[in-house]
Image (cartoon, rainbow, N blue to C red; front, side):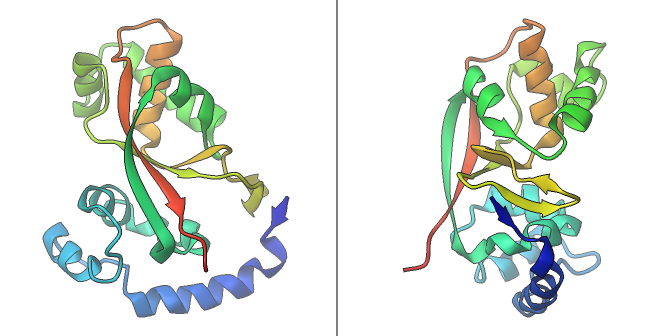
Length: 185
């Protein structure tokens, strides 16, 4: 098991400086197109959809995963079946937040996302997961999910998990962005 807490604070300061230099944080009132134009040169391996769904929409969460070294990410868009999604994707808050939030879809779907998933049997955009073979303790004594850690798409995953567990109609497969870290040579 890798424990990051003892040096976490020191590393966080250094990486924060690096992230500020990379300028991944969006400016107030910055459109996605403006953000994409600026960030795509810094992270050229990142698909446009991933930049929008994760770094742009959840810009306040960049610090949570800074230690993963975004510039070393490699993405593949894959089709995963329901069993693989249920059994292989984990996160910090799976049982305490993701699954309970996902119960909302079992009532009368009311939000755009609930209606979309209920009608189409899949999510409107792929969730983003990290292939993770290591046990890494990161914050609040929590581990990155293993063998795949959910980076973005918590509510979508909660809805699919609950529909599946309650034998509701779903597509057999769903698109997922799988992130692999390109190791240093």
